[in-house]
Length: 229
Length: 403
Image (tube, rainbow over all chains, first blue to last red; front, side, top):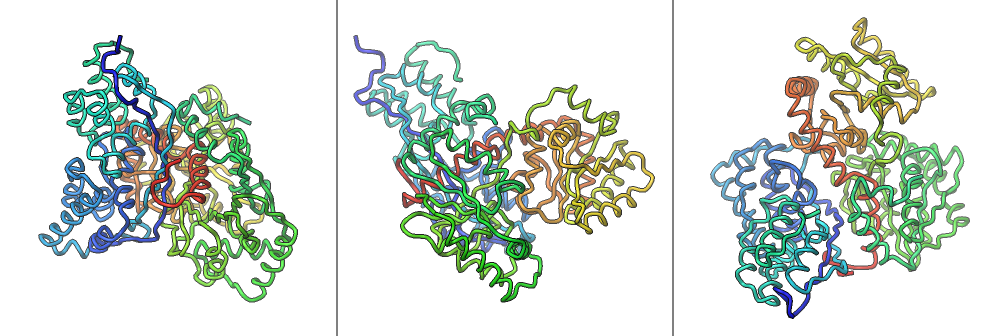
C-alpha cells in the first residue's frame, strides 16, 4: 500500500557550509555605505543580511542584519538602524531586489536627514564588506514520503535546513523554499506547501523553524513522533 | 591529546559529520603547513592541534619548519612590529639578511604539497618555489595599519600566492588575489578552557591567595601598556566608590622585557595600599588562568590595541560577562549588548562594570549568549571547517560551489 504523502521524486537533503571572503572594501559614513551597497557583489549583500541567522540565532532579540547593527551601534543612528532592521526580506525574491530595497531605505533617510552624512565611524569601526562563498554538499539523507520527510528533518543539521529554506529561495532564486516546492510538486499537497511558504523564517531561530515545519507536516500525516533532536 | 570524536559532546555530532563530508572531498591531496617554529608561540600551538585533527579526518596534512639564525629572526621580529604599525628601521641590510636565509630555505626545504600553506612573514619567500600547486599565505598579525614600507616589501611575495588569509575584516588589504577571513579559535578541551570542578577552582584560587568573598573583576594579560592595566585600576576605583568589589590583575612578563618590568612596577605603585587590588605576576599556567576566569564575576579586556584578543573568547566560553575595548578582533567576538559589552574609555568601562554588578540577570544573559557565540564561531572545530573550505576553494571558482 502506498504511504501517506508518498512522493513522485524523493527529497534529497543537501547542506551548505560557507567561507567568508574579504573584499578590502570599507565604509566609514552612511554615504560610503550607500555607494558600496550599490556596487558590491550580491554575495556581500547576502552575507551581511543572513550572517546573523546562523551565527547568532540563539540571541533574543536578534540584530537582524549587519547594516542595521553597524548604523545603530557604531554611528549611533537608531532611527536608520530601525528602518534597516525592519526591511522585510521575505518581500524580495532576489538579492538584486533586496539590494535595491536596502539602498532605497538609506537613500530616503539621507534625503530626510542630510546631516546623517556627517557621522563618521571611529577608527577600526568602519563597515567592512565581506562575501559568503557557499559550498553545497549532498548529505545522503533522503525522504520518499511525508513521514520520512518529518523524520529526516528532525535529523538534518541546522546548515541543511538553512540551505533549503533561505539560500534556495533568495540566493538560488527558486521562488520558494525547497520544502514547499517538493511538497507541492512531488507530494501534491498544495495546502501543506502553502502553510510552510507562509512562515516568515527570519523571525524564528533555526531550531524553532525545524520544530514548526515538523509540526505542520505531522499534522498532515498524523504520525506522532518525538520532538526534534 | 583529544581525538576528533572527543569534541562531539561540545559541538554535536552533526558538526563533526560536516567536517568528514568536507575532508572526503580532499582525499588524495597533500596539505603542507610551513611556519618558523615547532614549539612556542600561538601559531605552533594551533598547528600542534590542527595537523593531528586533520589527519584524524583523513586529510594528508604534514608540517615543515624553516630554519633561521638570530640575525634572520631579529629582522622578522622587526617585520612583525612594523606590521603592527610600530615605526622600525628596515634598511637594505635587513632585506639582505631576510633574503639570505630565505634563499637557503628555498634551496633546502622541499615543497611537496598540493596545497602549500605558509604561516606568517618568516617563510613568505618560499613562494619562489610555486609551480602548479596551490599556495596560501596565512597572516596571523594585525595588519590594519602596517608600516607601508615593510608591507610593500611583503606585498611583492603575497601577490604571487593564490590566496591570503586574515583573522579580522579590518586586517584585509586591497590585493589582486583572493582574501579569506578565518578567525582564530580556542580549544575547549585544553587545560585553559576545559571544564573544572568547583573544588579545583577553589583550591587554585586559595593557592594563589585570591579570596572570593566579594565580586571579583579580573583582567588577565601581560603587563604591557597596550593592555592598559593602569586604566583598569582607574575603572575599578570608579566602581569601588559605589560597589564593594575586588580587582585582580594577573599575567606574566618576560624577564628580558624591561618595559614589562617597568609597567609591572607602575601598576604596583598605582594600586598603592588598596588591599582589594590583587596583582599576580604569574608564570605560564593554563590551569590557573582557567580557574581564575571561572571564579571571576566580570572579566575585562581593556586593551588599547589588540591582535585578535582570544582571551575574550576564553572568558565568554566560561559563560562570563565581559567588558572589553572596541579594538582589534574583539568586536568580532562581542556584539555589544548581545554577547558582552564594548567600551571606548575608562569611564565607559566603569559604567558598564557597575551596570553588570547591579544587574546580575542581565550579566548572566550576556554570559550565556557569549558562550553560545563562542560555541558557534570560535571553537577549534569551526577553525577546522574554515581550513577545509579554504583548501577546497583553491580548486573551485565562484561564490556557489557544488561538491
